[in-house]
Image (tube, rainbow, N blue to C red; front, side, top):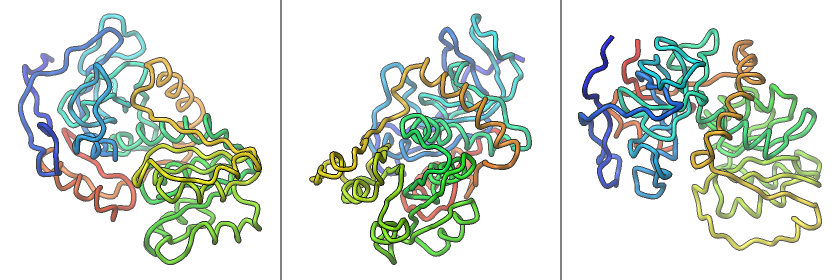
Amino acid sequence: MALPATMQYVDHGTGGSAECMQVKQGPLPQLKAGEVLVEVAYAGINRPDVLQRAGKYPPPPGASPVLGLEVAGKIAAKADDVTQWNVGDTVCALTSGGGYAEYCAVHASHCLPIPQGLSIEEAAALPENYFTVWSNVFERGALKAGESFLVHGGSGGIGITAIQLARAFGATVYTTVGSAEKVAAVKKLGADVAINYHEQDWAKELWALTNKQGVNCILDMVGGPYVEKNLRSLAMEGRLVQIAFLQAPKVEIDCTPIMVKRLVFTGSTLRPQSIEKKAAIARALREKVWPLIEAKKAGTLIHSTFTLAEAPQAHALMEASSHIGKIMLKVKGE
């Protein structure tokens, strides 16, 4: 079937508040070597999208300026050198941008099959969170069975993914959330302990719950005063992995625990990493995580779904942090 000359996409202009986004008509992406063109059914919304829209997270060189880091849909075209996928295949994919559109160019090695038992919308909610959690918690953070793990913001997309995977791989899982409703939700997903940070000092509570031993690994996206609390909350040889700063990235900390407890304080961002590194993460997910999803030991939780034209409302919900699970855009979904 012939491709259309133009497509709808969400434009955010020069950036600003959520209301700056509007649907426009524009040309389809031009494929580069190694890429496929996905006719997007659903796209996921993630906090980096909100930061980019606000002008605080520019896309890496060569990436689409259009928002959107994960999609699912059918392959509508492919570059001549792509052999692992065919036109008509249904995939979910990590993108370097361009997801809030009817068509999105994606590197073929960053596509994954739809896990058996999941809808295409559920599959669209997987890539950004699963690539991020796998690379940071299990590769960089080296979490192993029998260890203890803390993830902050357990009711968001990263949190629900980290809780499920840490539990599936045999760790004891602690998390922090901001309401009683969220406490109940994350416990249902597999968290052993959920601490409401509005009602308790999570660091004191965690220290008591671990018999003053601390946890082996922490995944944090908050920053600010959490950084020093995280370092104090780690066990000997513990690992703190930083993936974002919802609060201040510049903090004054006492570094003594790093030496005394031989800690590792590391972090990463996913989007600027090489094509090859992302392809390696995709292979690991397909081998080690997709079977868990198909066995219903992990998955995703969708909070709400909006149309392309409702992208401003979707971003406003993300910024309010009242959601439990993923926020999605329906582009051409069933």
